[in-house]
Length: 213
Image 1 (cartoon, rainbow, N blue to C red):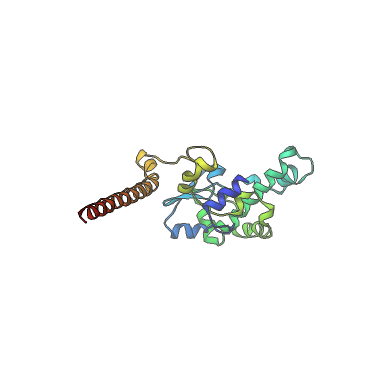
Image 2 (image 1 turned 135 degrees about the vertical axis):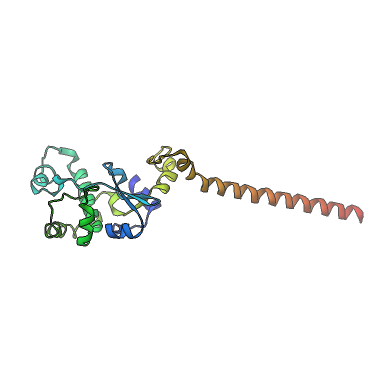
């Protein structure tokens, strides 16, 4: 429930709201590899974090043994993990829509997809994911890209923590995210104080006017 509420606040309700890799480059975003699933498809400024696709999720034997069997080693967590895995896999059907996207994904400094996977093999694999519905995946994957600045802004309310994820390298960047809310509060207070001053001035003028009469 918390993940669904978070996504509703942070993003458009569309699991397809994911730009393919070539489009990420067109938008001037740097693709940053992360192993933290919480950062997958989270972006800030000109960076977007993407978790590489592990080879074991491409294995039918792995799915049969751990996620599809009625009593696998994962036991009670099977259903939850399978929904998360299916949602995560589905994001790659949006990230890689063209052969040029696969070329980007397999670059040495990224390795988002194993280099020995061909375009034909990937298309065959992805074709099995097109029928996955939002009801089949975790709540997080009912939505696409999320903005980290908004996640951090609402973290105290939604996650009971000061921030969702700290990725700033300098204190200047860290405090920069507070400028907007601080300026907003300052503007509201200034407006209220000015209104009070105007009201007091009007009262003084009115009182002086009646005394003269």
